[in-house]
Length: 433
Image (cartoon, rainbow, N blue to C red; front, side):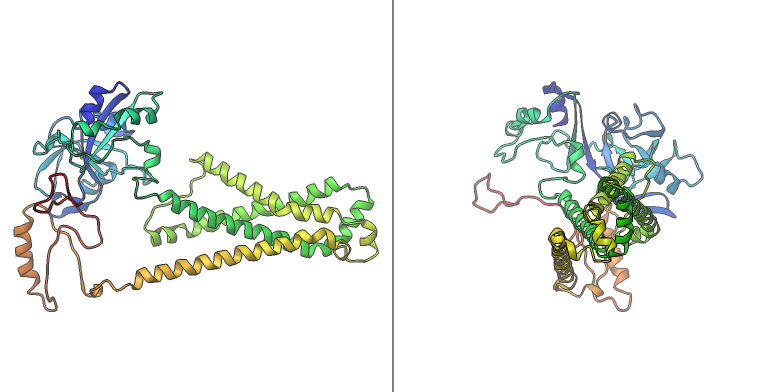
């Protein structure tokens, strides 16, 4: 497909096909044999389409020859600690030997693909690279600058009809910027992120309303200050500026403590969710600007109602010793609205928390049909798997306490290969996926 698109459509600058390794063992010796998840078979043009920087090696030749490999800096240090890995060899779980032709920078975790190594796709002469019905490959297309991908999609929509009999699908490209949070039509991670953003905004709004209510409630303690300032010539505008400045200042102080707490607890959070999140404001000025902007807006929203209410106090009423709030009942109806909104948000958050907790407990305690506490899973290399399983089974069943053992391509509830089947007597194009 990649060659067809590049040869027949002028919009395409480059097109490549890649295939994931789907996990496998790499080794340099029996002592240094590890299972690696992130690996790909790719042509050398992968370095022309993606911004994978080579620390060592020639990006124009690194994956040209069969049985060449490019390792990430992390993997090179792992298998060759304190050594220069260039020109040395590493074996896969099929006992094939690959010559290390390049070392690349480690790929950030927020990348669409995070390869720790690239095998030259020319190593797999046993694969049919001309097949149009093999979904194991990924095709990446680099369009010329200025090309509208929606118009390009209209042109290639029916390409599959010319290459597959009884085709039921249409072809389209998707921008890389959309793949990280929306990898396909069945997964849309951006919805989850928006859900958490909404929760965060509600909590922030709740805190702002609470601040406004507390400021208004404690206004009686500042009533004489306001009265004296007004008698001495302070106008409503200057008083409003003072209260808004105080609110914004308190918000920025809170932001400082929030960042400090986030920095302190981030390692524990990363350990809990098995991620490697970082707080680096200097390397991400856009994120820093957003944090400062949100803090400023929060300070203004939190202080705007108290500022307008307190600046409206009449000095005559205050200096007579009367409660200014009792004389302004009609003006503080907004306070009741703030309290009502605050309670409504609280109820929504509590209900959402209870619902999420019950769903989580359901998933955790659902009867799976077997006793999972007595089952264990381990992976064995794909090469000569059948013979190794027989030998391993004989040895494992000799261990006291082990009742039985079986093997499968994938463990339950994990992704697995799928293929269509047809029933005897059905039409040739009738398949069940």
